[in-house]
Image (tube, rainbow, N blue to C red; front, top):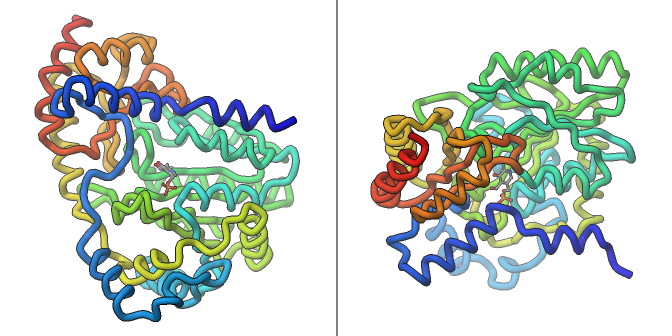
Length: 394
Ligand code: PLP
């Protein structure tokens, strides 16, 4: 007998993957230039040159055995120190290497953090719209998912609803800013209100409610908008970071967790992170890429192309009458479906070879996600197809 839950999970592909796979079939049938695939969040711009240089230097100059060998379970000490120093300089924090745990990307940062915190019957709060994998990650550590709807329109936190959703069983809250799928950046005002509630409720229930900040899109921000660093606002914070998007390295699987040094029992939480990673076999993130990202810390891919795409798509679609949430970051546009059933809307879009993702699994029925990490020409060439689609509803 094997796990039915895992069979179910393994057999059910995410809707994003389903549409992405459909796109590959259509590409074979009619050619890539005729398919407007806006389904997946794979960075479309190359890693910056420093990544290639770091790989070449490390391979040529470092000891050829050491470079591929195991590091400490939590990651190479110098790499963790480089990351801690970088964050300290940038955000005036006071972290050390032992507040950092190297991971295979944000997904592992999240699963490790959840596993470290969860005890049976714990509740974890997430806000709409949310990354669909949160559900899988929370349930896989035995947690209960509690979904709190955000304000319709601007998708900032509805503080009243949030406050009402907290119970004595609430263990943690996950936030994601810049957000996948809305591109919204949580305002400082929202964050302050959220942290105030967390402090009050932690006091009321006599135990900390943790804040997990999932931030793979931290650097993908347009128009000089600041993304507040959460440990500065709330001490019981874990930051789940990855270089998948900022350095266009999603396939290399590299990221880290920050356990704030100001957290209650910070050393025990860090030990629990080490234990959780160990129990899941997530020790020693890829050794070469730990060192590569340490060489490239603070650098990003050329995100000006995403801003160009954002403007092309947002301006183009609003002109055609689509109702879009203006994204300040990440590389997604969140658009109101032109009919109540977003899946039916996306099916109609397929007639014009437009591959869009219905947002039901993101907790927002009636919306669709458009990933604009594509070549700008794809957006320009897709506009007539969007126009035809919109005309179906006039
Ligand atoms: N969190 C969010 C909000 C994401 O959008 C993604 C990936 O798209 C992840 C986590 C997982 O990131 P990674 O590929 O670094 O594991």
